[in-house]
Image 1: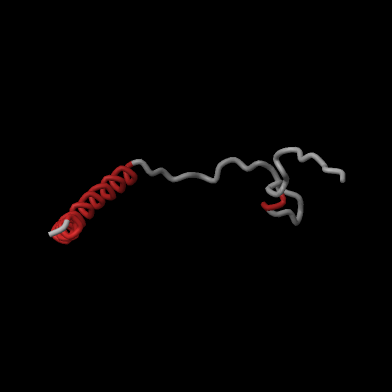
Image 2 (image 1 turned 180 degrees about the vertical axis):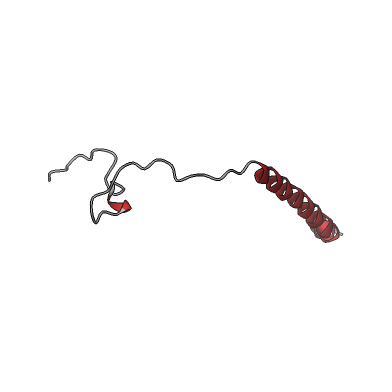
Amino acid sequence: MRAYDMIVHLRQLYQKQARHERFEISKALFQAKLSEGSLGTKKRGKGKKKGKMAKGASKCDLGALKPKAKVANDDY
């Protein structure tokens, strides 16, 4: 039996066991996250409003499309 054949055979033998162990670890991890998150959740209010928008303005018009840095003009 060659080394490659041995590796393939061992993978087939232990594949189900490794898969089951990964499942159990994932299951425990997700249960821990859910139990921690359920204790610390709070309802959040609307918060402070920043002011009135101009008539017909949308949230997209508030500067989302403005460039952040000054761009140099290239004259050719």
